[in-house]
Length: 243
Image (cartoon, rainbow, N blue to C red; front, side, top):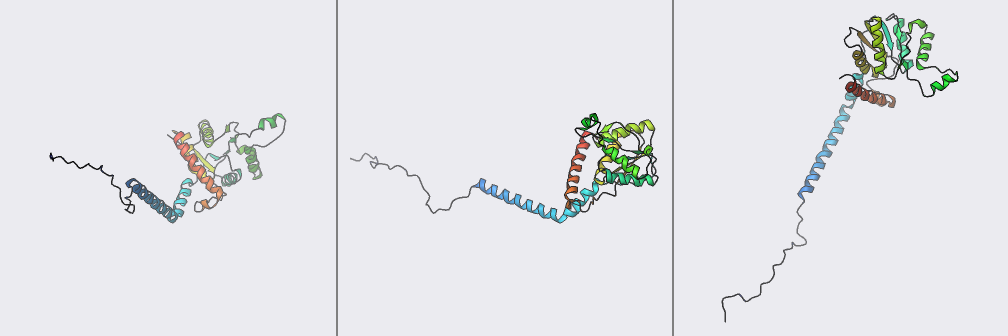
């Protein structure tokens, strides 16, 4: 007797499985990563090509920016900054012989470890300032021209501070600062900061005895290191002393 019910047993629904050879849909997240990587790679290659194309003018500008050279006139004092005694000392001798200043100042540098032991044993070892004084003496410059200074400077900032105090005591109105070419930009900023508020004319003179060349400095390891370190110090001095 049929009561209107479906007496046939219902079969369980089978999970649909795509045929094994059906194409696999790409992962959207994976596609974005690949796309981003391609863009990044393209930008890196483009930046590399642009840098190589403009490398020489860019690096030349970086070198030239560090060098400050002023037109010189007679001053009260020539300041020979510590370090690189030969190139800076020779440039100082030239300026003194031209009659551009009656006196020379050179600060004492930090003494090497063990120096006190040498002194206690009565052993003589010349300081860098002594070597510079000997160079001036050999060039015929009287000892009285090199002003005495007992205080030790450990940085360009210390040298500028010592000179700034001397300027106040002696009433100097103009200075010629002699140093290495790459050191002139930071030296100017440091000395201007040291005599801030005083009417002192500061003239920078990069030593011509240095072999630094703004148009090819990156070809020599010595000057590559020098430029990199100088920019690091310039940033450091700017945030620590000039603000």
